[in-house]
Image: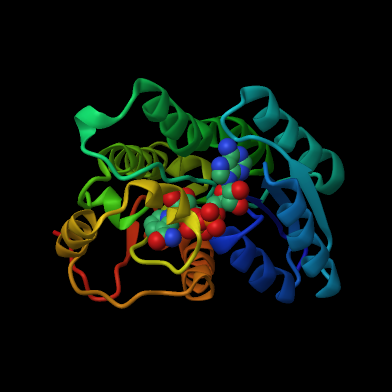
Length: 248
Ligand SMILES: NC(=O)c1ccc[n+]([C@@H]2O[C@H](COP(=O)([O-])OP(=O)(O)OC[C@H]3O[C@@H](n4cnc5c(N)ncnc54)[C@H](O)[C@@H]3O)[C@@H](O)[C@H]2O)c1
């Protein structure tokens, strides 16, 4: 296996789990994160599994950093076959009118603009390469918002829209996109949201999430790899990983 996979948000959680599974299958990996310590630790674990890997420190919301992670990947590996566009954050749970515009900008700049910039700079490489696959990490919040999560839900609805647009616009160029939508995935992403967590907020979030089976990052990583392999057929669709919670 000499295929090259670029993963953003590879320091922890889903990005790390996907990197380790792909390493075991012999893919060549370019790992991106702004968390240098944990990102380098993922790269070290990948190396121990015998795969070729580079780690690039980059903030996905900064255009120069995005250009740089694409350039560095091409310099080392020559191409990008698969792009797992995965980095994302949550912000404190609030009602929409309670969010500051700074919180809005921070979340949108990472979850949406960061994902857009990745797409913008990776697609020309894939065009040059004669094709490629993009797997965007979206969310059950791409279908329906959970309570007190409106800005995050807006970012993930929009990223689902970008996914569908790629599916529509690049078919003739052999470039495909799939959204993978975890629901309750056991990572630390919600730690930053917890500062405003109360019993009432928790009850409303549970009510709007509905009954579902939580997934580990490793289980969702299996779906990411399924999406990579099945991208031609799944092109433009969002794979609902809601564990029994159905969205229409
Ligand atoms: N955990 C869940 O329940 C859940 C549900 C639905 C969707 N998601 C999505 O899954 C993706 C992965 O999140 P996770 O749950 O593994 O959480 P996580 O916090 O473990 O992973 C997110 C990674 O993105 C990195 N990151 C954040 N901002 C960045 C930036 N500006 N530049 C570079 N790297 C940055 C973090 O350092 C981290 O390594 C996110 O897009 C998230 O929105 C998570």
